[in-house]
Length: 441
Ligand SMILES: *Cc1c(COP(=O)(O)O)cnc(C)c1O
Image (cartoon, rainbow, N blue to C red; front, side, top):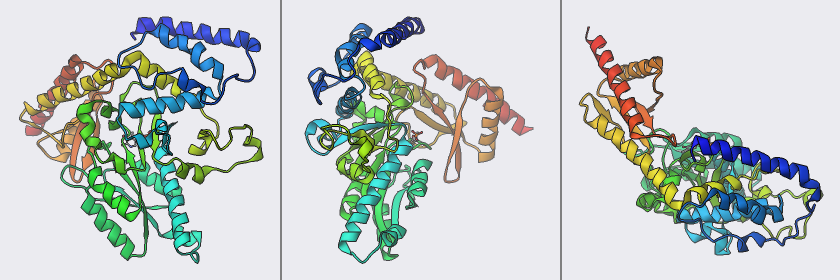
């Protein structure tokens, strides 16, 4: 949708909302539908090709309004999480349509999803340890709990540990910044020898530093063996798994207890929309279910999905609407194309870096992020970034792995094109030439 169409559609939506408010008195107070009504009205999977705006907006009255805010808000979210889960080719166990305990929920951020999964892991471990040793108090068990992630994991994992009062151990990665099974297995042995109780592992697919991928095929069996909750943080990179050519990075996902991707990062959905799937949602529900008489208000209580037990807030936004719109207005093909374009531009930039002998690539370019640096000291690279910032034509964020400081080029605008890549590289090389000249004298 271009800016001109957005102006028209935006105004139409304002009219729709105003009409609704003006006529709300004429609408029934209670929805006249039965729980589960929406499944019959919607297809089982996202459309392959884009649908028209008229078709999508027309479905508001047909699909959403009969179910008002509830149950429509819950039901659309369940269906959208199944659509998206199928697009990613997640194992059936993570989906509602499997008829098992699995299912997905939309949260505000990846940080929240890591936290609630850590809390569910904690709860699961407390129950298990108490059963094994009734003399232990909850405080005894809590004091011994430990979780793991790589030293490349997002800071939100450490924060989850702080919120949840679980010690988090940062593990070293291999030369590709990937956390390996052996490393985890050794760390677990060491913790156990110290009398600690390993409960949780957060693996990252697409680290924020350099878009590196942990080896979940190796980590998974260690987690199963040691009965640790495996959470996968694929906040940024996860959207790419809608393209079959990137799915090899997801192999091992069957070992996970929970899997997170934020479509607001690489799939055109506006902030905030962070998707979380669980293999056994009852573990989350049992952790957070504090029913009060005020909230026991419907016949379906306990029988239907009650998302308030899956999250920190009680109230919820209708976030699945924007996912529904994006999936239909672009279609699976359109979104795949969008991601492939991003990756293509990243590789275009990578090629430019590789053809200039003053520069080198750091790590591997897999998706939309290119890590690069001048083949020079960290200080010189820091100066280059300073000059880029002062110059003001482009924006780059640096990072550091071990002792190597580098710059990061990331494609993230829906309108990004080859000309932007060429422009950015022209600015960088111009400023690098100046810097290296100044350095000489
Ligand atoms: C962006 C990102 C996060 C944090 O996401 P929020 O939604 O802002 O909490 C966590 N992990 C990874 C790998 C990320 O890329």
